[in-house]
Length: 246
Length: 201
Image (cartoon, chains in turn blue, purple):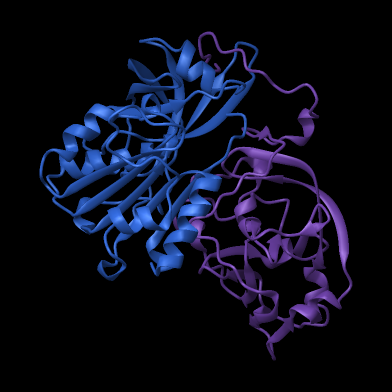
């Protein structure tokens, strides 16, 4: 396997995009970025004037084909780092970043499909990198994305997902909302369950490659459901994150 | 010169002894879960633990046999490579020294192997000398499956991925054999105090 040194690099903010009321994307120019695979993450290091440092990990949202690196950061109100990254930072600001990190939760277009991607909240971020990579690579791998969000306004990348799903190249996107639905809502209105996975997902017989990312209870529940439905445990790639003061 | 992030002040916790927090880590009160696949669930009735590899006769224990061995309850700090540290965690388990008591081996390393096909490598000297346990109880309760129950390896002086969840055996090896995360770019040894997160650290 290719081994690239994991060194700290300077990242310069070249754009900020407010995705939802609580999530913001930072578009970054990173000196000497070695490239990444869709699904990997990066470490961010902030240094205060008194020398105090804080580090956190964030999934990369951009495709490997994108010359800039995007991170989408969910603001945790009592967090130490996310309110700074998703609130204070402006164009031109700099911080340190290193990566890419993680070789397990990744997908390359040449690996093909079918794919089942299941994201809870900001767990959509690394899955979005896969979809952007899929589009950039011109892949028509049969792909189902199931996104669980709290409310409609919490859905990340909504317009881009609508556009990608309308390309007719084998991508289907299904939304579910767990805390109320607006009038005329076309998606589901409950937590992900076996019935929903059966309805939207590729059948077990097709042996899809599966990626599940989200808060720990979400991933635990979805992964258990998938195993219960008969999907091979080894086909289920999981990435969990917890509410841990980030 | 240190690189300063404009406007970042940080909010180091004052209720935490900074000398107990390795570089780049922050202290949490909850217990995050990190694993690469679904959570395996093995009933203790079907569970066994095996030591094999560079040993004359492989050893194995059933759950009841493990419980009949001398138990230790200990309080340690744990450090996950994903940046969180948790202080003063209390566990009960069997020291690896107890499991290896009387074993004569040329091995210098172990590979821990697990339900769910996870593996991780640790130098033998790091799992002996009172530094590692086969732990089955956390904070007085049976260890939950999502945290590695029924039993996990506990090597608290290394990053927590070395403390393999759902561990079912140790293979004693002469040569060092990198495991799951070690092959995926993480550090081969993983000392949090030297911030050995990734292979090039």
